Image 1 (cartoon, helix red, strand yellow):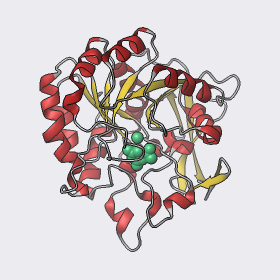
Image 2 (cartoon, rainbow, N blue to C red; image 1 turned 180 degrees about the vertical axis):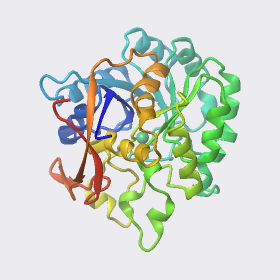
Image 3 (cartoon, rainbow, N blue to C red; image 1 turned 120 degrees about the vertical axis):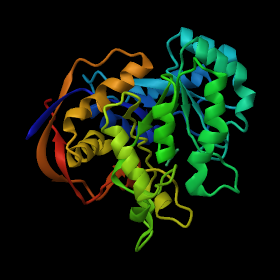
Image 4 (tube, rainbow, N blue to C red; image 1 turned 45 degrees about the vertical axis):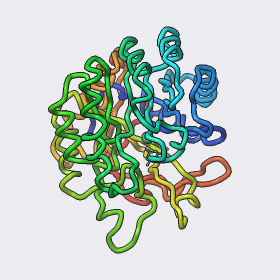
Length: 346
Ligand code: DOR
Ligand code: ZN
C-alpha cells in the first residue's frame, strides 16, 4: 500500500501552550486534525469561562486562513470549581471536557485538585450535562514509586469514582500500563482512554539505557516493554474505547536539557504519521481510521468529520530542531525517519 485515505482525524488531547508558542503549535495541529481538545494547564490555569473564551480566541487567531480547524476547550478543575460554572459552560457549548490534575502530578498542576471528594457536586453537574471528565491518572503520594502511580490511581481513585458516578463520561488520558488497558476494557461504556504516539513507540529502556534522554521524559513516565505492548494491542484492537490523543506538550530545549528537565514531548509536527508508523508495523493500518477519526468523536458525542486526508508512503526525516517563539524546540523523532507523510493537498 502506498497511499492511505482516512477520515480527517481529531486530536483528543493536546497542549497548545500560549503567547508566541501558538504560532508553532496551532498550525501544526490544524494541518492534520479537524478538531483538538485543548488542555487548560496554562499559567495561570484556565479556570473560568472568560479565560476559556479568551484562550479560544488566541488559538483561533493562529489558525491559518481557510483552514476549518476547531479547538475544543476544556476547564481546569480546582478544589474551588463551582458546579454552576460547569452548567453555564455546558449551556453555552463552550466546555467540551473538564481536566482533573491531581495537585503536583505534572506541569502546571499546582492549582489542581488535592482531593477528588471536594468535587462531588461538580462531577454531578458534569454527569448531568454530559461533559466528560479528563483524568491525569496518577497519584501524587511521594511514597509511591513513579512507575506505579498510574496503577495506584486506578485502584484508589478511578475504581471508586466509576461506582459513585455511573453516568459520568470519563477519559483516562495518556494511558501507560497494562493495568489501565484492562481497567478500560473491563470498565463500563462510560469509560475510555487516549493513547499517545510516544507511549506506543517507546518504553523506559529508550529513556534510560546508555544515557538519559530528556526529550523522552514525559508524565506518566514511559513504562517497561510489556506495558508498551499492551498499549499497542489496545490501540490496534479496533475497540472504540481507545482513541487518539497525542498529549503533544512542547517545552523549549533548555527546559528539557536541564538539571531539572520538564516532562513533555512535542509530537504535533507529525502526529498522524507517528500513529501510521506503529499501525503499519503491526499490520493494522486498516484499523487506524477508527482509532484516529471515529472513536474519539463518537465518545465525545461529536459528529464524525467528513473531509479526508491522504497519507503517502514516502520516507522523510524529522527536522533536528524547530523554532518556538524566540526559542527552539526539539520535535519528537528529531533526525529520524518516518515512513508515512501527510499529503498537503489532501
Ligand atoms: O509529559 C507531560 N507534559 N505530561 C503532562 O501530563 C503534562 C504535559 C505538559 O503540560 O507539559
Ligand atoms: Zn497532557
